[in-house]
Image 1: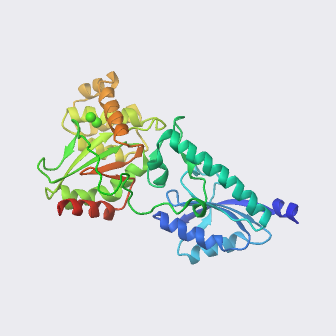
Image 2 (image 1 turned 30 degrees about the vertical axis):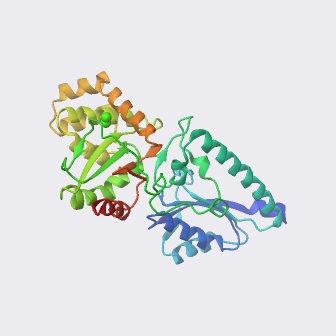
Image 3 (image 1 turned 135 degrees about the vertical axis):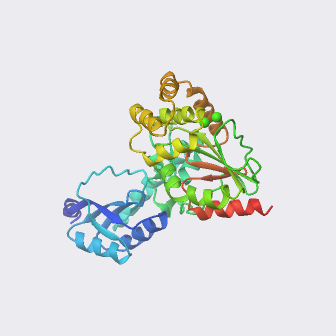
Length: 345
Ligand SMILES: [Ca+2]
Ligand SMILES: [Ca+2]
């Protein structure tokens, strides 16, 4: 029976519409976990996809879709079964029915956890791991740190969905704004320093969903001064030159317009595109192109990266709100809470 069972295993990729946060993925995961025949679940709310391995003799695709829809989400089988699903950004749950399998998995998990702990201590990147769903980071090989997250939440503890402040309560990081672009009043009581880059999807998500709210409610009202510093991740091939290009735009006083343009066009960041955006914004193209081609801003970008690393940044986006560190594309409410705390001091 066990042998036949394995032959009947199927793995399908499902599109799941309507997920917008880790809690959504957890809800779907918990719903599927209770289904007889479901063997392994990987849910990514970022990609709105799930990989589900199941015993086709015990449960049908329709039953799986029905369960997801009962949880309140729209589901369908993905047209392409390898549709750029990034397995590193998932909640992964493996369900095994036999006690032998359970023991085997427990041993494997213990092995993985030991490895993960060792890796983390080596890399000193706990921050990136605990916030992996909402930030991007890199390990020493320049790859996303996805393997670190292939741990059952039940074995490692639930990862935080609340804003994460990486230092002990009350402790602040003394972060310098350097000479980087500022938005807002110089005399604002609260300073937010963001370490970010233009190719990172979580940075774009923050830009799309949260930044304008902070801008309207706090920057334009003189309460917050906002600083953008560069932290291009090495596995994003366009991030470095995009960061340099934004500094070239800053030379001509158009940093924020250019910054917005890059996030609005995150999928097109080639050198040609970077130059085109400068033209679109009416910059002096000869000066801009020369600035970009010469690498004149490379050292500035590197300094930001080095400073960020020194402050404990290991993934993007990362923020310091009057020195209080917040990691990832957190919801607006997370920023609001800390800003209000700082304003009330
Ligand atoms: Ca700088
Ligand atoms: Ca910079």
